[in-house]
Image (tube, each protein chain N blue to C red):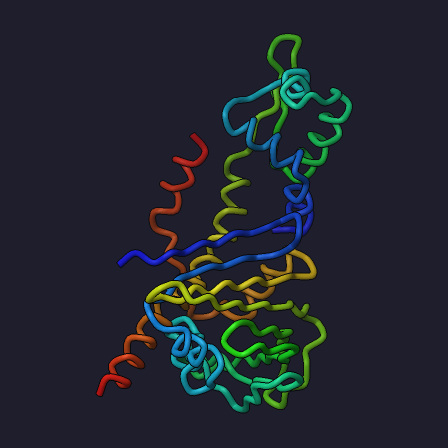
Amino acid sequence: MNNLFNFIVDKDNKKVRVERSFNASLDLVWAAWTEPEILDQWWAPKPWKSVTKSMNFEEGGRRLYAMVGPEGEEHWALADYTSISPKTNFKFKDAFCDSQGKINEDFPRSDWDVNFTESGESTIVNVEITHRDLADLEKIIEMGFKEGFTIALDGLDEILSNKSK
Amino acid sequence: MRRDVFQAIADPTRRAIIGLLAEQAMTPNAMAEQFDSTRQAVSKHLRILSECELVRQEQKGREIFYKLQIDKMKEIDRWLDQFRQIWENRFDQLDETLTKMKEKNDE
């Protein structure tokens, strides 16, 4: 099963675009993104876990959650929902914060625009993240995934050497 | 990685220069011809790329060739790849979740 997957870093516009198709109906995919108990099942890369403390999925509402590491370490983050068009699109502003939702101003916030399109038996999700500065991405990776998140770098050198030929 | 590296690659002309230099080392004159641009304009971009250590000068006879620093470029790619990897893992997990949801619905 080969699903569409596109990952584009648009450096001119400081955007990251991720596109992926899923072999499931729009109803299911929408639920997976918007219901906390489902969202927690997949949002954090293993061995990290996503634990939603509160979530009010409506315009002006907020999701407050922790990324919990294998040693029990917690990184808190939130999403402030700014716009919702059911089963089509939702937008939010992210932030790092403490367990009470107090925003850590040292870290930049990014704007997320998540689009859903039905395509036959599958559903295509388009995520567009607009950063204040692309260098912010580095901070975000450090903050969210520094400990415990191992990255498969195997084979990357090979890809790069092919690319630079 | 410092912020300036990203500013360096944020410019389309500089990215095109990087693309050219990925093929072979070149002189500023040869690059200017490729871009239909002035040598001065190319030199300005090359200076920024040099400051970020993305290119290096090499004297060959009377001419100066610019060479891409592949290792530095790899650093950027590796770093962006981490982000890509996060999304791949996340979406593979979403596939599993959706499969479970479908099974549950069918029961």
